[in-house]
View 1 (tube, one colour):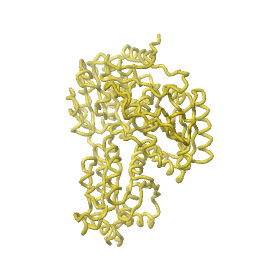
View 2 (cartoon, one colour; view 1 turned 45 degrees about the vertical axis):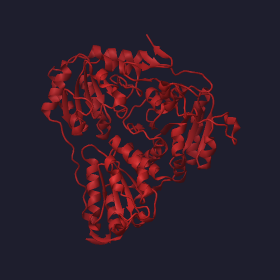
View 3 (cartoon, rainbow, N blue to C red; view 1 turned 180 degrees about the vertical axis):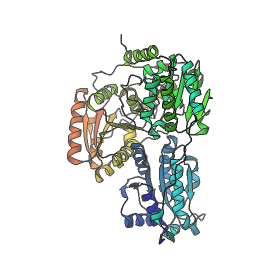
Amino acid sequence: MAKMTAAEAAVHVLQKEGISVAFGVPGAAINPLYAALKKNGKIKHILGRHVEGASHMAEGYTRAAPGNIGVCIGTSGPAGTDMITGLYSAQADSIPILCITGQAPRARLHKEDFQAVDIASIAKTVTKMATTVLEPAQVPRVFQQAFHLMRSGRPGPVLIDLPFDVMMAQIEFDPETYTPLDAFKPRASRAQVEKALEMMNDAEHPLITAGGGIINANASALLQEFAEIVNVPVIPTLMGWGTIPDDHPLMAGMAGLQTSHRYGNATVLASDFIIGIGNRWANRHTGSVDVFTEGRTFVHVDIEPTQIGRVFGPDLGIVSDAGYALELFVEVAKEWKAAGRLRDRTGWVAQCQHRKRTMLRRTDYDNVPVKPLRVYQEMNKYFGRNTRYVSAIGLSQIAAAQFLHVYQPRNWINCGQAGPLGWTIPAALGVRASDPTTDIVAISGDYDFQFLIEELAVGAQFKLPYIHVLVNNSYLGLIRQSQRGFDMDFCVQLSFENVNAPELNGYGVDHVAVVEGLGCKAIRVHKPDDIIPAFEQARELMAKFSVPVVVEVILERVTNIAMGTEINAINEFNDIIDAA
């Protein structure tokens, strides 16, 4: 055993649990932990410019690779409240991140001390555990419990709040004998899997819905193998995009009210059976339950027992980690195929493939200012199959999901449920901190971009290069589009005459000047034919300076993107293509 401060013990646990990078902003109440980080010297720290930004960097880091857990650190009071949005975003998408906050000494709690707030109580509803540690000797075991909880069952975030005197106290701890706890994950039974396959076999037009739980379980290869054995088309959710490559013959498109394909919705409406694996039946995917479920039977496989029946009652529910369930589905399906028990799905697959070839949306617009749909066409032309896309919310995210192509798990990094504006820049930096080599391309509208724009300085300081495609219509575009239902265009215009940049013609903020002032590089594009040359220039600048490079495309002010209130009532707004 060794004598050390509780903060030093906490850092040893972080290291033993596999943490090599942390994101944060130091302050007086958390300085004992920073002193321990400095003494340990084995965990790289990336300094955020805003604590919410650091929490989203931790999210991006976690989402980038199997086994990653992002850590964000802040001081007492507002640092913790700033991280609540990151905790909410992580919880909503089943993403494990660890937030560590400093706190006033124990004797000053409940005395309205400077920057003393009951952050554990505030964070409880958006975490798997939120606790203020009151006994120094408990610190290493609370951290051990935190990692166990984050990895067990449905993954999610934890907040640990550390009073100053607790961190400074001397305790006995032996780092050499520390061992992480094994995570618990429920497993499907063979009987459940056989029943689900019987139900699939009885259907004429079955589908597999692939959710983000498959990516969390690192089970995309198993999902693809299962789909190929039973020859059943796959509809990924937004969080499950990449579980099967976009150009795979069994990838039938995404469904939903916004982030969906025409052919994906049409295929869901033509189906009579759906097995959902690792998904939540989110409302942007389903629309109203009545329309989505009519004429269909359902099997729902999810790691969280209370997700089964939360939105609607399935005909069969299976509580299981997606990876464990798919291992058994593959095993049983192989046996059934060898025995000739699986139905021939050739005709149904051909119908789905025909819809995928023919029910398209037009993107080849030559408009100036640029129509946003053209931007995604150029991105598809230029960026390769291995590109990681990062996006948050808004018309830019919705159009990206409709038009971009994703071929691998974790190559679509998106805050699916919470959707906080400002998420994209810090999340992309977190992805880059995890992955130093792959092409990373972020996509933002101008308002998302402005929310946490200061985090670009982090990319410049710590050499975290990526390309950021900024589509600028000087509007809160999604809110403007939703205001059509109220016959108004109110408080959503970001345009103004910039006295320092009259050449912007009323588009307001000079993003190029701001980006360059933060130590990064930026290129502005006005014509669609200049988009790919800008990407080429951005790649050269990124290689030369090793900083984020922003490609701003000036869009037409108003473009409505396809969406609707039901999956059978999508308003296309723009040109569609019904090919032969």
